[in-house]
Image 1: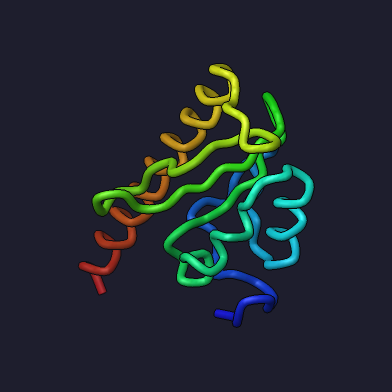
Image 2 (image 1 turned 90 degrees about the horizontal axis):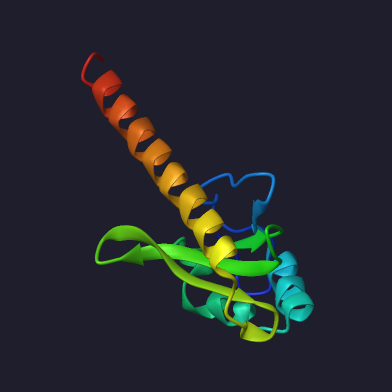
Length: 121
Protein backbone atom coordinates (compact mmCIF):
# COMPACT_ATOMS: atom_id res chain seq x y z
CA UNK A 1 0.00 0.00 0.00
CA UNK A 2 1.33 3.44 -0.90
CA UNK A 3 0.87 6.90 0.54
CA UNK A 4 -1.47 9.25 -1.31
CA UNK A 5 0.33 10.29 -4.44
CA UNK A 6 2.23 7.02 -4.45
CA UNK A 7 2.37 4.33 -7.07
CA UNK A 8 0.27 1.20 -7.39
CA UNK A 9 -2.88 0.27 -5.49
CA UNK A 10 -3.71 -3.18 -4.13
CA UNK A 11 -4.80 -5.61 -6.86
CA UNK A 12 -8.23 -5.01 -8.38
CA UNK A 13 -11.34 -6.93 -7.35
CA UNK A 14 -11.55 -8.20 -10.92
CA UNK A 15 -9.05 -8.11 -13.76
CA UNK A 16 -11.60 -6.36 -15.93
CA UNK A 17 -12.19 -7.02 -19.61
CA UNK A 18 -11.42 -5.53 -22.99
CA UNK A 19 -13.92 -2.72 -22.31
CA UNK A 20 -13.62 -2.42 -18.51
CA UNK A 21 -10.07 -1.68 -17.35
CA UNK A 22 -9.01 -1.55 -13.67
CA UNK A 23 -7.24 1.59 -12.53
CA UNK A 24 -4.34 0.35 -10.43
CA UNK A 25 -2.15 3.44 -10.14
CA UNK A 26 -2.56 6.83 -8.50
CA UNK A 27 -1.44 8.78 -11.56
CA UNK A 28 -3.88 6.91 -13.81
CA UNK A 29 -6.66 7.65 -11.30
CA UNK A 30 -5.90 11.36 -11.39
CA UNK A 31 -5.77 11.28 -15.20
CA UNK A 32 -9.16 9.51 -15.27
CA UNK A 33 -10.62 12.37 -13.26
CA UNK A 34 -9.13 14.90 -15.67
CA UNK A 35 -10.24 13.00 -18.79
CA UNK A 36 -13.78 12.48 -17.49
CA UNK A 37 -14.05 15.82 -15.66
CA UNK A 38 -15.17 14.08 -12.48
CA UNK A 39 -13.97 13.83 -8.89
CA UNK A 40 -12.93 10.16 -9.00
CA UNK A 41 -9.57 11.02 -7.44
CA UNK A 42 -11.43 11.92 -4.23
CA UNK A 43 -11.97 8.16 -3.75
CA UNK A 44 -8.24 7.92 -3.16
CA UNK A 45 -8.47 9.35 0.32
CA UNK A 46 -11.64 7.43 1.13
CA UNK A 47 -10.71 3.87 0.35
CA UNK A 48 -8.82 2.99 -2.84
CA UNK A 49 -5.57 2.40 -0.99
CA UNK A 50 -7.39 0.27 1.58
CA UNK A 51 -8.86 -1.95 -1.15
CA UNK A 52 -12.39 -1.03 -0.13
CA UNK A 53 -13.24 0.61 -3.46
CA UNK A 54 -11.95 -0.30 -6.91
CA UNK A 55 -12.12 2.08 -9.84
CA UNK A 56 -12.44 1.02 -13.49
CA UNK A 57 -12.24 2.89 -16.76
CA UNK A 58 -15.18 1.82 -18.95
CA UNK A 59 -14.43 2.17 -22.66
CA UNK A 60 -17.62 0.82 -24.24
CA UNK A 61 -20.53 0.94 -24.94
CA UNK A 62 -19.76 4.50 -23.79
CA UNK A 63 -16.83 6.06 -21.96
CA UNK A 64 -17.44 6.31 -18.22
CA UNK A 65 -15.96 5.63 -14.79
CA UNK A 66 -17.04 2.73 -12.56
CA UNK A 67 -16.56 2.28 -8.81
CA UNK A 68 -17.20 -1.08 -7.16
CA UNK A 69 -16.90 -1.98 -3.51
CA UNK A 70 -18.77 -3.50 -0.63
CA UNK A 71 -22.23 -2.50 0.44
CA UNK A 72 -23.74 -4.39 3.37
CA UNK A 73 -20.83 -6.87 3.18
CA UNK A 74 -21.50 -7.75 -0.49
CA UNK A 75 -19.72 -6.57 -3.62
CA UNK A 76 -21.79 -3.97 -5.45
CA UNK A 77 -21.60 -1.31 -8.13
CA UNK A 78 -21.23 1.87 -6.11
CA UNK A 79 -21.07 4.42 -8.92
CA UNK A 80 -21.18 4.56 -12.72
CA UNK A 81 -20.90 7.98 -14.30
CA UNK A 82 -20.15 9.41 -17.69
CA UNK A 83 -18.12 12.50 -18.45
CA UNK A 84 -18.95 15.44 -16.17
CA UNK A 85 -20.73 12.95 -13.85
CA UNK A 86 -23.53 12.46 -16.34
CA UNK A 87 -25.88 9.50 -16.08
CA UNK A 88 -24.91 6.68 -18.42
CA UNK A 89 -27.16 5.07 -21.02
CA UNK A 90 -29.31 2.04 -20.22
CA UNK A 91 -27.13 0.00 -22.63
CA UNK A 92 -23.99 0.92 -20.68
CA UNK A 93 -25.60 0.16 -17.32
CA UNK A 94 -26.75 -3.26 -18.56
CA UNK A 95 -23.36 -4.05 -20.06
CA UNK A 96 -21.49 -3.08 -16.89
CA UNK A 97 -23.95 -4.96 -14.69
CA UNK A 98 -23.56 -8.13 -16.80
CA UNK A 99 -19.77 -7.87 -16.55
CA UNK A 100 -20.01 -7.24 -12.80
CA UNK A 101 -22.32 -10.19 -12.12
CA UNK A 102 -20.04 -12.47 -14.14
CA UNK A 103 -16.91 -11.17 -12.36
CA UNK A 104 -18.57 -11.60 -8.95
CA UNK A 105 -19.65 -15.17 -9.78
CA UNK A 106 -16.11 -16.03 -10.95
CA UNK A 107 -14.65 -14.62 -7.74
CA UNK A 108 -17.08 -16.68 -5.62
CA UNK A 109 -16.16 -19.82 -7.57
CA UNK A 110 -12.42 -19.17 -7.12
CA UNK A 111 -12.94 -18.73 -3.37
CA UNK A 112 -15.01 -21.93 -3.20
CA UNK A 113 -12.30 -23.87 -5.04
CA UNK A 114 -9.58 -22.44 -2.80
CA UNK A 115 -11.55 -23.39 0.29
CA UNK A 116 -12.18 -26.93 -0.93
CA UNK A 117 -8.53 -27.35 -1.95
CA UNK A 118 -7.37 -26.23 1.49
CA UNK A 119 -9.42 -28.97 3.15
CA UNK A 120 -7.19 -31.56 1.43
CA UNK A 121 -3.94 -30.08 2.72
